Image (cartoon, rainbow, N blue to C red):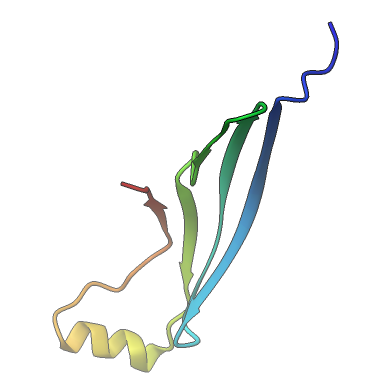
Length: 88
């Protein structure tokens, strides 16, 4: 079988780092893929973003004063968590 020049396929990987307020941060990743078909008179393309969804693993590092603020306001103190973001 020979190479078929009518098709192109590609993808990308993304690494995500997020932080908020100096007391929480997350690392995550996601994958995208795409394909294109070409002939003389026609070009068709398709892409899929976040085929794995986007995963973010959160960690928190609160001071004792920040923890006390959570307690005083009736809120739970967050612990490590996994956030999964999907495309609709």
